[in-house]
Image (cartoon, rainbow, N blue to C red; front, side, top):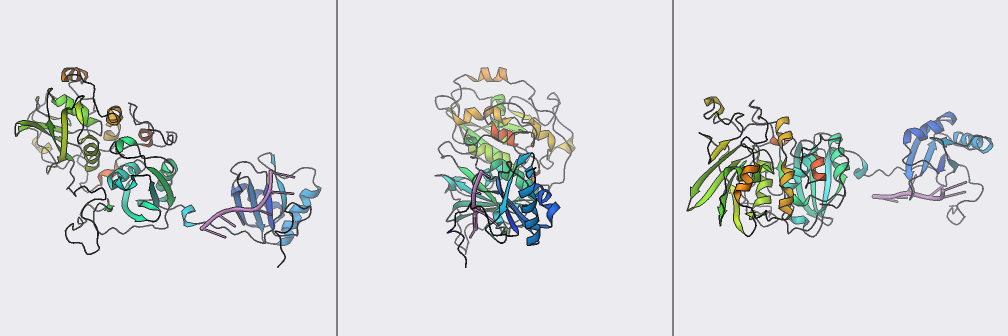
Length: 448
DNA sequence: AGCACA
């Protein structure tokens, strides 16, 4: 065949082709603009934009060679150059005879994202952290994780491509916020493309895969597993039944740890619904109830082993409780139900007690002001203040607005409520209520 | 302003 590459590419005449090569296009010129440009001369059957290192070149393919010739001829003798958005574009016959659109699956928007977690400790990122990160953009249906040559990867399934796209746009190239990971874990960068999958197959709830649409899916049989899967998580931690209620025991309690202190500490991760403190084995323990398991998981991971006060005082040990809904009989200095708007109201309506954990929707999302505590997590030591200082800083009535008392359908996956908005990801150390998703600018990479 | 990319 005729060797094209042996010729200088910008010789004055190009052999005609129904494909035209365009240069000097404005930034991010669209396919529509290319079609507009070519339409007067014939039928544009294909285009390719954002070509070249500067992404300012493009190709237009006409149905017929004569149409391409017409366009080239017109602008060759026209006093007005071809323009897109007022910018002169230069046209010539392409040295190819057709446009090949190599759209990979990674470019075709879909509802499932392929996430590669990069970093020394990528493997230590739990599926729960991934769930939390991606839940900021919408309900996450399923997640599977696996090891490939590319490293530690996950498939994250949303309901639709739009939601997936917003997550991809916001998170691709970003790091997982440090406060979601143990402090000794190296930064983990997310690389995100679309997957060709539309519906992941999740057989069991496990450390490797979750189906959040089906709470009754059996937990992976940890002992018996024919497929060689681990009964331990990738991080080597034991598989422990998660719960929305945490059991915290306080070690080395040099200072009094009050209900208010616990409320403040645990509110950093989401709305605390109830707290009950009690003495056990000569120490103090507390049960802390969140509306959902995810919040409890994050709180546990963030707080486990940390001290409330500097100097190793009041070290927290946290496990999951078997409780799902605490029965608070009386609001006093050892137990409180924060879902009761009026703290003076001691014993709520009997119908309120013993219900399903309340599935708060919007209210909980706005109430969530966990970021205020986050800086303390990056530097785990708390100010060496006695608890009195904390108590006075905490209003007797918590800052939470009255939680919606409506009992929602119990099978609504808790993740339908936004656990975290992109704005919170952006500035984990700042206080304040996050702006609604969509109004926040993409957060800065590689900070936090 | 000068020919894509799996």
